[in-house]
Length: 111
Length: 113
Image (tube, one colour):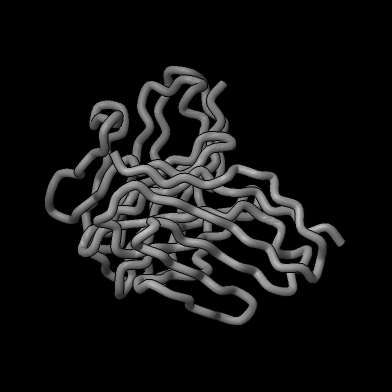
């Protein structure tokens, strides 16, 4: 049984600070890793995908992957109130398009 | 990314009845996925719908409860049968675009009384 673990939060971060979200996964065969953002009452939207060890940056977002330690993280720089949402970590295997989701971390940016 | 629409966006249903949810994609896709998100929970995959073959269900989900149709490469339906309050959830369809990242439809919010 694949497991994806996240701290459910809530995580409160002051506006302008860095928000750090973490995720661990149990299946060493996992190849692809995703961060989704979900606003209350809305469907998840993809923020970042990462496939190789190291960092991947896109604007204010940086995804970090460490396959040896089986964790993936998301950093949000210069946090804005609009970043307040639930962040879902998801993983899948190479060639398998089914995603396994974590329980999500609720992030609140405090103005 | 594909544009995905779902109908209805929300519904309130009585216990024991059934609801069929429609998912339409603006491009042809080989696979469509149906997820459930119970209140305060994460997403759980119900089944994978392939055109021309029976859907593949995940552990804990059965065809009698969640029959799925996939008549063509742009459309699928999920029926929630003989509903109980425990079926109150958001139901989301999803497609894999080019590559292996998935995008989601807007969801159907179901409340069962």
